[in-house]
Length: 104
Image (cartoon, rainbow, N blue to C red; front, top):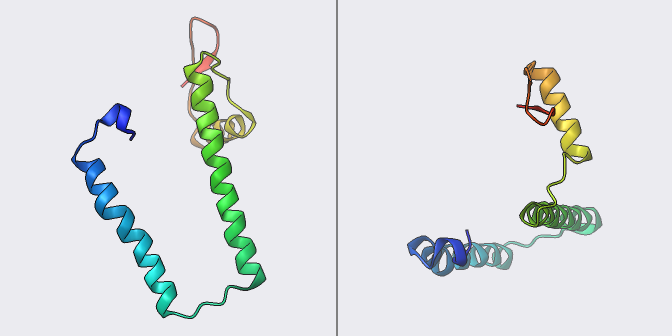
């Protein structure tokens, strides 16, 4: 949630003042008391996961931005493949809409 849509309510205050400091300090405390050697492969995996998360975040925000600006894209490559696999595996029946497109 964002402050513009949710307001500055109890959950936002609790998250800002309790949850965020707790999670960050918990990780720092673990690393301070436990000796951890990550190595090259481990560092590569951490960087790959971080960039993958960033890519997913930017893709989702770009799609949301396109939808808000009236550029509602049809299913993208991976979304189209995932939908077709689900349709085949779950044997979902589709219906025709007024625009002639198939919909769930």
